[in-house]
Image (cartoon, rainbow, N blue to C red; front, side, top):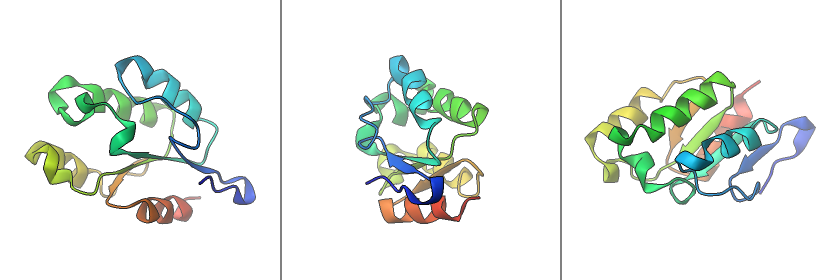
Length: 116
């Protein structure tokens, strides 16, 4: 559900009716996120290629979100399910100012609510 308090909208991909994040949809997803305070993506919101770091999709997505200064939280309950490298990626983003990995949607909202 979208948070509409004091012009600080936090949206999920479902709220915005976004397509699954694939190579073809990167610009669509990033563009839609430009109008919100923070975007929450779940495992179901990203293509399987995202979890295969060799594909480059995660890197491309992170670069776009960073370039446009979009706050995004990925809700991934079990990062280990996607391999050691994916766990390392999630760990490296534990203090990133724009991109975070968390295990639950309430955690995602809590982090986004702390941002200015």
